[in-house]
Image (cartoon, rainbow, N blue to C red):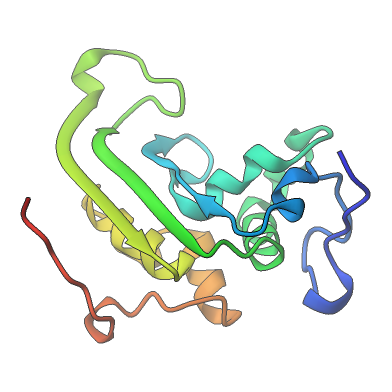
Amino acid sequence: MGPYFIGGGINGISLKSWPLYTEVFEADKVINVPIAKTHGLSTLTLGMKNWMGVMGGWRGRIHQRIDESLVDLAMFIKPVLTVLDAVRILTANGPQGGRLTDVKVLNTIVASQDQVALDAFGATLFGLKGSDLGYVLKGHERGLGSMDLPRISIKRLNL
């Protein structure tokens, strides 16, 4: 775990510094592969929420400003691609789950270079809009990406 600091050149709003696993910065390219599920605090776990997995330290501290903290992380960690696993999504009692009836089979994979767009689209898989997720709205407002799905080229492939 390295002395990587959020802040400085990226203007972290909530997180000014945090210990992060160094492997994510030592890799030539990083691909983020989250599993789509509900989450009691952030509503959903999608691309940006998945970055909590590279955090060391006591992560409970970020829960007070979760949306801002997730955007700070997403602005600091730049994947070349995010691939959302929505083959089976957890629709309730996340992140751990409760019953098999909480799982919905969608057989869907979503990929994007834009973390905000991916999360905005991912929200629609749960019957939500991107703007229903605070971190998506804040990421859009801070220029991390676009949640304006009608203006984004979305290609659907049937295999």
